[in-house]
Image 1 (tube, rainbow, N blue to C red):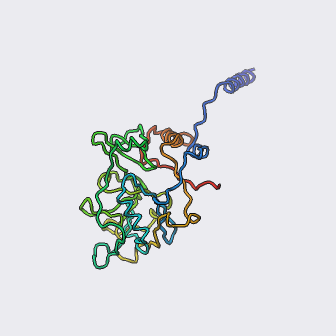
Image 2: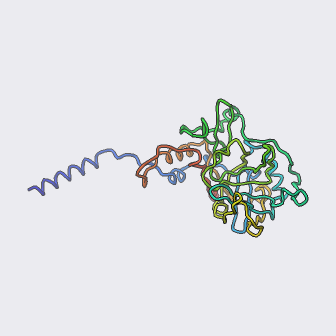
Image 3: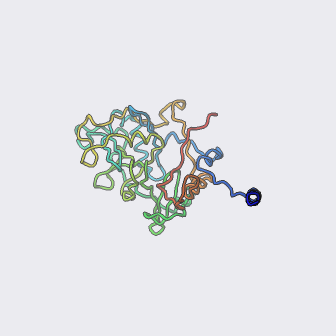
Length: 306
């Protein structure tokens, strides 16, 4: 009798559960991206993207002309003139940066000529926040950022801002590409570049001109042998990784360019991606209910076949 009663109760519970409305399944990031409309993606601008070729593969870098127009123009000129071809990765500092350029840059007699690029540029640490807002490019995030009163994304790049100063700037997140400089704030030209390969060094924000971010090939830059005790610079020339060449995508035949697309950071799809990463589900036992600009990035994909 007891067994029969228990089975009856179990059946009632099962029926009630089946009749009860089931909670909507929270979409994963992969599902969101899979279902995204084509209009939420954009192709790379070939005039603002670089292809760096190493012996181990290719690195694709998107440039940020809205934030560093003078440096981006210089980098275009350098790449167009073949400046980086045959140079080297000079520095790999663990949990910090991979840096490349001319090993003889400090020796005027040996330094490679800059060609059509300028030898002096103004520092481009920030841009007017009002102009960024007027353009509609800035998508603000609600989450607190410890490094700036406001944070969000523009053109696919992580952005921090301060309404009191009226300035906005690109943040140093994983994959960020910046222009190395000496002590003088206007000593960077774009001829020496670095990519962040470690924990986001946000203390560099507003101290160095940020020129872009790596879209593909970060594993090639982050897995290189670490340099020596002098801030990760290699002690011997033979330790350096050679750069075969660096080209603007615009200088490469269209059929040979990497066909990549970047998710628009002012799109509904990107907002859904941010929300999914803010409110983790599935495997996660604890959801942080929080996100910040360096813990997400604008997704990149191969362009779908026509």
